[in-house]
Length: 151
Image (cartoon, rainbow, N blue to C red; front, side, top):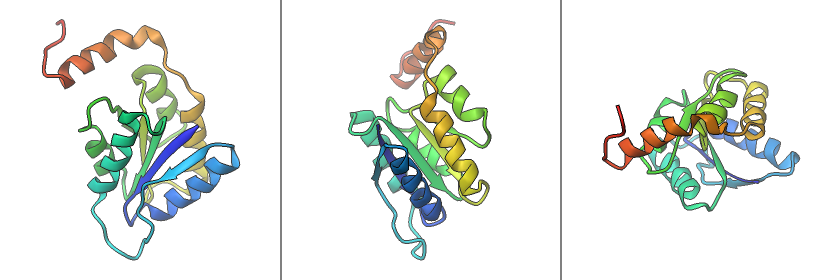
C-alpha cells in the first residue's frame, strides 16, 4: 500500500521512524516532508500536501505527525474528501477506520513514543470501514459540499 507521510519539524523524527516501519511491513511510504527537524516549518503545508495526495488517489492513506497532531488533523480536514483523525491509543485508529472511514491519521510526536505510533499505524492499516456507518458519512459529505443532510 502507498502511504503518504507528512510532518513538521516536531514530528519529523517520528515520521522517519514510521517510514522505516511501513517499508519493513511491505508498504510504500511516500514522504512529503519535512526532512530537517532543526528548521522550523509551517505544518499546514505538509498536512495539505498529504491530504491532497490522498484525495487525488496518489496514495491510499496518509499519516501526519507534528507536536500534538491537532494542527495537522485540522488542516487535513479542510481538503474535500479527507477524514483525518487524531489518534492516541490502540482503539482510536481502529474506530476511525471502522466507523468514520478515516483516510488519514495524525499523531503527536511529543505525546506518543515511536513504538506506540507504529502500533497505531498497524491498527489503522489493518482496519476496514463498516458499511453500516455509511449514512453518517453521507451526512458528512453533505456538510462538506455545502448542502444540509437530513435531520
